[in-house]
Length: 99
Image 1 (cartoon, rainbow, N blue to C red):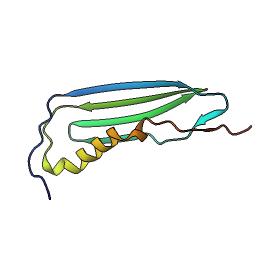
Image 2 (image 1 turned 120 degrees about the horizontal axis):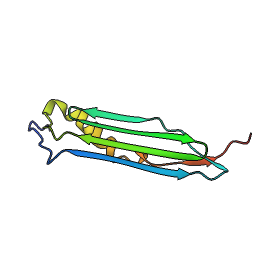
Image 3 (image 1 turned 90 degrees about the horizontal axis):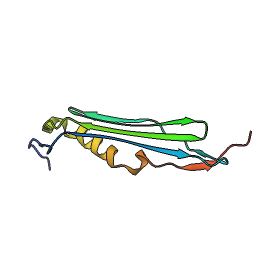
């Protein structure tokens, strides 16, 4: 089945979240690539910065509130799936490699 209707979001959204984690001395965070997804009128980014033992996760979602046209459904679906994926902000701790 396919949908041919234009989606009308209720209002613009700006969401900016940060998590700061101080890692245990004997653990590291498994590497995760930065995430980005966008579609006309919306953008999601999630990135991690590690400085010393402090891990900062930044999650930014902006949505202009523009209608989503049927041709943009695949990109819109990918953005929503990425935004809701728990792996976007999940942190897997692994034993720290011995020097």
